[in-house]
Length: 276
Image 1 (cartoon, one colour):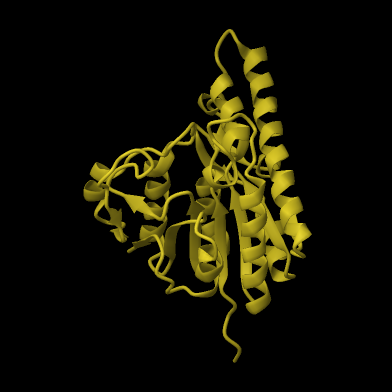
Image 2 (cartoon, rainbow, N blue to C red; image 1 turned 180 degrees about the vertical axis):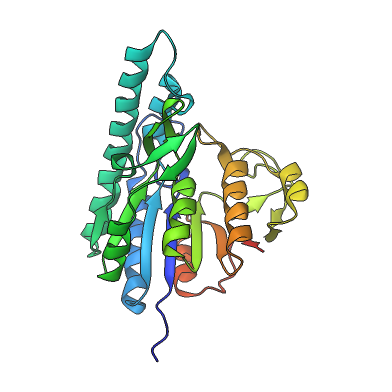
């Protein structure tokens, strides 16, 4: 019997592929290098089923913050709020086009699966989205690409869903073996390594020891309306608790070759692992 192909969810962080301090500023050199690393890993492991997601970075986050889109429709400002919903979604889509083009340019069959087309939330929680096209795309060897996006919400009117929240939902339908979150720093630290000296890397986080790791996590560097590093770790820890065989790795995409190696080798020594 042939072994079941490995299924990997990979997120390219918004802080990695954009300058989050400058409105709608992509880091094209980084994005193109990462696309090349993904293509290299794909050539060496063509059987790997790979779902790619990316954050909105300085595209969707700036618009989302301006219009408070994650919080929903503001009473008395309905027209402005819905305009902000449209603007935030359009900004996220502009970055997605750049990501798709970079992947296509290196020969990868990348296709956008737009979350806002089918996502339904309730008070900020993602309840459902149409996932069968994603599974079918994986089955035929395509690289489906999702991204942080706006979504309709039965309580708030609208909201924003992060890539991690989308991954968490899809994990219940598609069952990944690994989730890789590539950002600007090499894992999780006791403070913000972009601002504070003397912080230490946390090599392993045990999902069940929530009180311990919540005390030491800091927010991410730059504008982030989805909650920063603490929210990312919490989402992934909940997922690992639900699916004990799942491996989550948070690593840096700034180090040339690190992402490609992590895709190829589940035991690659990079960043922080979240385990059961």
